[in-house]
Image 1 (cartoon, one colour):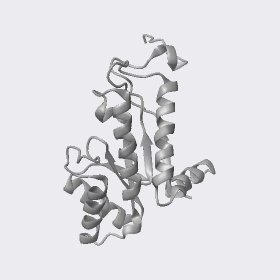
Image 2 (spheres, helix red, strand yellow):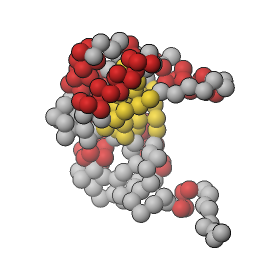
Image 3 (cartoon, rainbow, N blue to C red):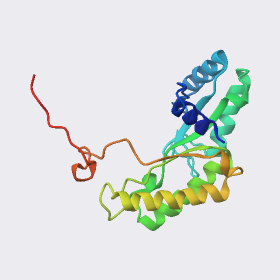
Image 4 (spheres, helix red, strand yellow):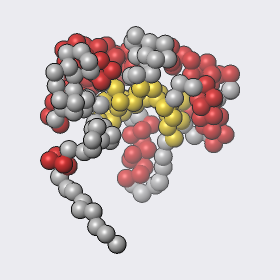
Length: 193
């Protein structure tokens, strides 16, 4: 069972529990997060997005393996127990390559997933909600789910320990211009006091 799954089970059983999460590659931010974990003797989730860290280096210049090595080195210098550090990928999917056709973008996304799980990322947020070249800016739920399932299969096939993986599926970020009302199910009418 993964740490994330254990926390969810505890919450469902009525025991309030949480996992602090930081999505940054900046040294001072990561140091503060690691020191917090050390001080409280609690796990910390260190995350990277596919824009920050990917198989081509992302805007940080780091691959997933480089990022984990960087954070682990920092944790060692700060004398933080490595068992307290959990790695997560945030909003992983084809969106970094959305200017390309879907086949090319999804090919890169499959390689991305493999690189993330092989490096040791265990919390995987699959977000395939954005369209690729020639598609709407936001794809429908059926296509988004099919792409996420395809990427999850890659994770399961390449993770050193698939049972350690935890998944977040979808996006909580509304598409440009707001949520799709036709798919929202419920709407709230504004009122005046």
